[in-house]
Image (cartoon, rainbow, N blue to C red; front, side, top):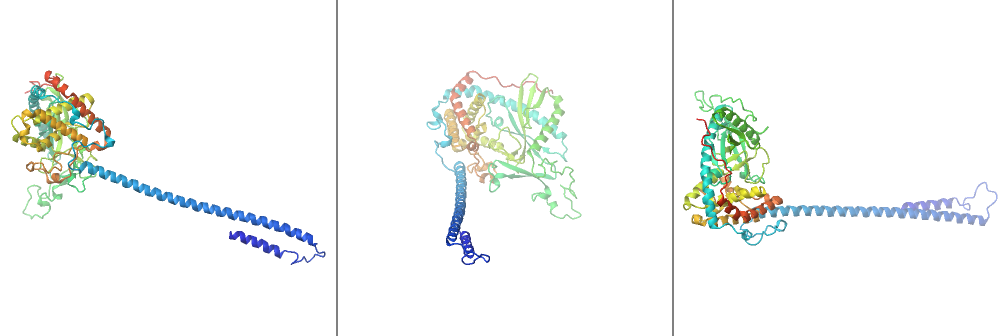
Amino acid sequence: MALGLFRVCLVVVTAIINHPLLFPRENATVPESEEEIILKMQAHQEKLQLEQLRLEEEAARLAAEEEALERLAEEGQQQNEARTAWDLWSTLCMILFLVIEVWRQDHQDGPSPECPVGDEDELPGLEGAPLRGLTLPSKAALERFSERCIRGATADAARTREFVEGFVDDLLEALRSLCNRDTDMEVEDFIGVDSMYENWQVDKPLLCHLFVPFLPPEPYHFRPELCCARRPVPLGRQGYGRIEVVRATEDARGCVCGKTTLGEDMLCLLHGRNGPAWPGSEPETLLCAGGSPYLDTLRVMTWFQTALTRAWHRIAHKYEFDLAFSQLDSPGSLKIRFRSGKFMPFNLIPVIQCDDSDLYFVSHLPREPSGETPASSTDWLLSFAVYERHFLRMTSKALPEGACHLSCLQIASFLLSKQSRLTGPSGLSSYHLKTALLHLLLSRRPADWKASQLDARLHELLRFLEKSLLEKKLYHFFIGNRKAPEGMGLPEAIRRAEPLNLFRPFVLQRSLYRKTVDSFYEMLKNAPVLISEYSLHIPADHASLPHKAVIL
């Protein structure tokens, strides 16, 4: 605007200076007439007015553009502020939702047995009568089934265990004879675990699970690390741990000769004067992950499979059957094939003992009770199988003679196995059934487990599972359970740990949860028919042991 006014003034001044009346032309001899001068001044005035209008229009346009730019800048700033506030509010809402969900799943005490699962996970028919009002087999049908099917399976299990244990003893002895004690891992005696050694497996074929502990060669040893002992506990890592391979001189619990100066007349009987020079001192030789001191599960699986193959080739000429690996992803999943075409599977699982306890680190299991997957190859699954076997054995001594607790577990496991064959596997496993039974054994009086109460206890076990499914909450029996018997000898870190929810995967895997709930109620619906049919017609789908399988 100021520029336009300046231009107008400049034009006016120029016109005044050049006016002929003020400064007449020097060479003019005849003065112009008054009319001509007035016409020229009018024409010049019109030009000035037009120029002034043009300048005013240009100044107005520039002012409008400037105002528009300022308005756009203000609107953009307001939008940015609103977007930032919305993003912050959305983030806070998401964090609040996750905190509430984790608290609800892991820290809410005393939930109602009929607690709904929420609007987003509601399934038709979940609410209402226990077990959806489905009728379970009668007491007489359950007793007849237990008499005709379960007791026969128990007798077959004893013969199977005896045969498998004799063969595995010979196989591990051959493995030890092929190992170099100075450079190779040392294999110890096997430990029988799971249903075959807890006397409740009924599914065919009968399957033995055997733990095979191993140790590193001197001067190395394993130093276990429990994830649940760390603070804070990594999410989903409560059921795992790591194993560090260290020298005796690197551990405060090792030999003192590495931390003191021995005199010239003193000699360490374990390590000699200068310590052993072990040729396999590289981490790769010790089955550790690359560039890490922690034991690698994949390397252990490869080593164990190779060692078993060499051991079998050494003793194969003594037997009249073949031995093969039945699952490539499980190094010790073996299968004996007889010439008659029958077979007998069993699992040899390499494990590492956690200090002096009955807790073991497992490199691989056909199923993982925690429902989680290892984050890396240095994560080892914690197995409480030996503790579970001890607890069942200890509890059985206090129960009445002929107690029905194992019969309940056998019937539930039988129904789950048959349902899995009909509709495919779901998120419910036999380990969940056993966990539910352990909780009931701890909360019920011994007198409640009489043989005459088989139907009541089976109904209670299935009702406990239904309640756990509706709440998506089934806690591990040992991890974080301060009610576990103190005489079990559990590590203190396990007792003080946060409880481990075995049904936690159902919170995120909604399709798996829906399939599991549908399969569970379908199993209850088919239970009377299955129990009745198998009580009348005992299936003959299991392999009986040949009388002469070994060449003596």
